[in-house]
Image 1 (cartoon, rainbow, N blue to C red):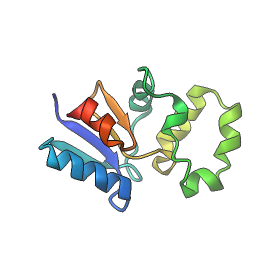
Image 2 (tube, rainbow, N blue to C red):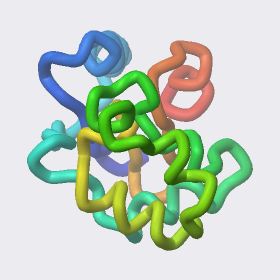
Image 3 (cartoon, one colour):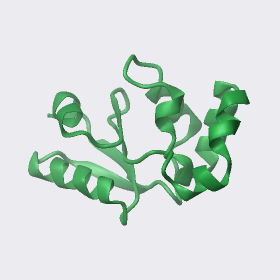
Image 4 (cartoon, rainbow, N blue to C red):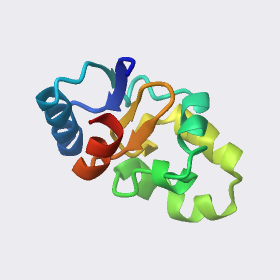
Length: 119
């Protein structure tokens, strides 16, 4: 497996759990602050091309940027392409962490999914 990239936020509890799990498994990764350096649109597009995720899974629905931006309604009318553009511009809209090796992806942290994909 090639080295992983973890897009996350250091103050995020879920990201801390993901980092702890990766560390316990001895998995090497690079941390990228999703709020200052969000994943490029092409990365987000690739994340939803498999069978596991859809564009709706990319949203941090409990986040302030999502709620205050009215994204529950906006998502209903925007094309997938427009949604990806918006997500790539605002890392605070994105569910975290996103972990990738360039081919496989996980969005959020669920231990069983991490074990399946990164274990």
